[in-house]
Length: 577
Image (cartoon, rainbow, N blue to C red; front, top):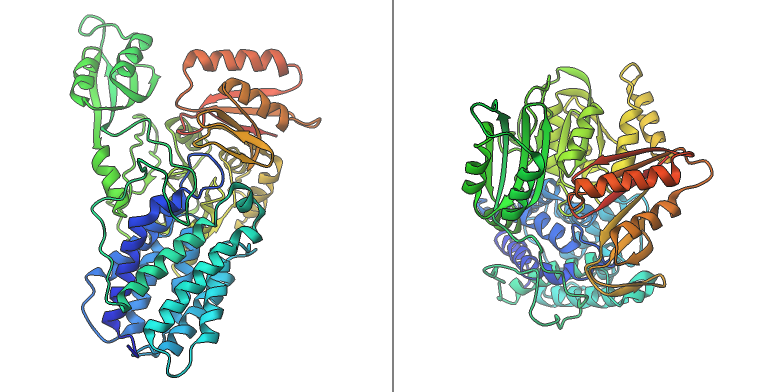
């Protein structure tokens, strides 16, 4: 084969997406830090699947540049996590390199991949070697040097894949933490998987998507991407059941006792959250029998709202690359509800409507965190966080939903900053000026919200909100998903990790011991405020004891604020100012 036309390139992109879908669990296993997070494989899979959907039904034509641009646009809008954003930039550069081309020979293909390298590096402020960037740089440079006028497409793609494998195997030599844990870079592995899918087409071996990729394997995975096995889900699937109940008077309904109510729900489901505000009770529970929950609840009052989502179907939708459904609900009686994105009823091409000067957007995960951000004046909440990173498109929808001229985004996670920034770029020329306050933790985001002052100019607001990030030291307590050793700390699966940013302070059996270790590591002589946000696994009794113990230990020296965040995955989020 001497040239690639638009039809062949389309098949290459679709084959690449299928190959990545088939192998993303293996890529997820390369996670260096043994915590349950939004892994690279899943993020890249959702990103590339978005590009594939963009071109799947595109009519056949001979415009190879338009095809690559459509694929690039799909990746850009679907990009999740830093790895997804960088992948979208790689194919943005690839498309840029095809402008004016009708067919691609090997030399033109090599130039397109070199353009991919250039654009990807420009998109990252501080490129780190030993990552996906290294793999695209070294493999594209090798291909550019290899191809000649008579090189076939088959020879060029085979050489590119071989060079990418060599570069990937070299990543542990550039990033010491990879060598310590014994893995290659996950983003680089994802790129190699994409290139292998593209190369298969020119060998007449289009890769079909398997019925369902699974995140676990009965035996350790034997592959060059072998890492620790992903932990099985403890929660499983079922129905996410949410309702708001208005309690009746005792003559008509049974008396409501929150402790007994919660005990029943926990006996028939999990992820239980109950918030009572006067005669209003807001309930969130995951269960296999939502009808039983509703029948039980109606003994105590009447429903204001009911929402039931099939989480098994949701899981399949997410794996298929569709937008995740948000399960959060808002309490009745608020002056204005805070929208939670994504919502299917907000189309991507919705008109930009400006009704006010300023808007705040924050990423949140957990009913308690949602309420705290609302109280701090956030206009729109983006549902997401560590386990499911929002996409660029989610942020674009959120920006439009604020209906504000100047919008400030708080990603509250280091792996979400790039997607939020990319959304701001998408909005350029729309009349909306969106900027990212690069908050990397929930406590940072909350501190930044407090610095928002609508009396100032947009530049002054941005300056003050960004400066507030420096006043907060953050940490978290979560559980380990695998046995490993990092920076001299032995990690035991299912033990609790005290993490100060990305540094592991301790790994212990008891979550409360981990909490104490973490707080001791965060406090300094100038500390004056300690904020503890409790996760969904912390009971009310546990929370009361934590508050009492902290008040006794630090009450004379610190202002202590213990709140319920109800966030998944993390038993505690800590902020020290």
